[in-house]
Image (cartoon, rainbow, N blue to C red; front, top):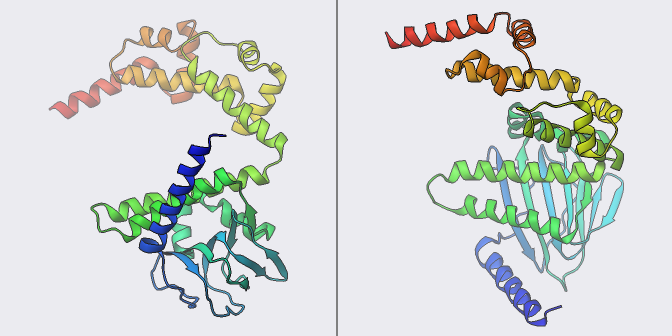
Amino acid sequence: MNIDRVVIDIAKVAVYIKYMNTNLRTAFDPRQYMISRDYEIYYYSDTEITRVDSHTHDYYEFYFFLKGDVSIHIHDMEQHLQPGDFILIPPNTRHYPTVFSHQVPYQRFVFWISEKFCNDLMRQSKEYGYLFQHAATSHKYIYHFDVISFNNLHSKILRLLEEHNSKQFCRHAMVSLCIKDLILTLTRMVHEQETPNAVKEEYSLYHGIVNYIDSHIHEKMTLEDIATALFVSKYHIAHVFKAQMGLSIHQYILKKRLDLCRGAIASGTDITVACSQCGFEDYSSFYRAFKKEYGISPKEFQYSIREMISNDSI
């Protein structure tokens, strides 16, 4: 290990902590209700803190533990916290911390978001709801992350705090992006912890299949080609892909090639050229597939595009 590098890193950490305590720290407020409509975020570093009674609230609390001699009580469970612990506390979930000593500062990030804000996010993508639904159904609230993963979260929270406190142009849009980035990063990290290895491997294989197909969509491609490239049997990749996508590999390739052909024809490419470029071996099979998928022939589609362009230009 390079001792000089360690000394530099320690110095950077010291400067970083000083910056946080000077610019981002908030005096502890024992209130358990939100003032803002959508979210509130705080960095606390306390050497003295009054007792916090058992309580609930009507919003989600994201709690990131940095340092201290603290236990968290959630329902009938108590756990002594370690740096790197993340806690998600759903609405109406009774909880409170116990601080055993003030010899070490009690440091944490606290991020509150309203149920309405969560619902708005879930309308944009169901993946935003994974954390909230998992906590509600599993009643697991505490997760521990390694140093590298937690530092990644730390940097995202810091960016959110800085944007929240800034007066710069586009502040509100940047805050929205920071919140989404933080939630999706947490979602991925929790999902990876909670997903069994076999399921992870299948999910990874599925993405490998999709990436191979996308990279070779213009070429002749068989199930054996994909299986050989990914070092698995063709029966296994066929099963995994169908389970994940709901389509066979052949159906997926066909739909993807037809979509590419339709885009090429719409942009003015000759039909037979588009057919060849998109991986179809003969025109007759392309013609039948196109008409079955879209309800019209390639030439009828081409004509409708030309009519549309002609009408727009009048």
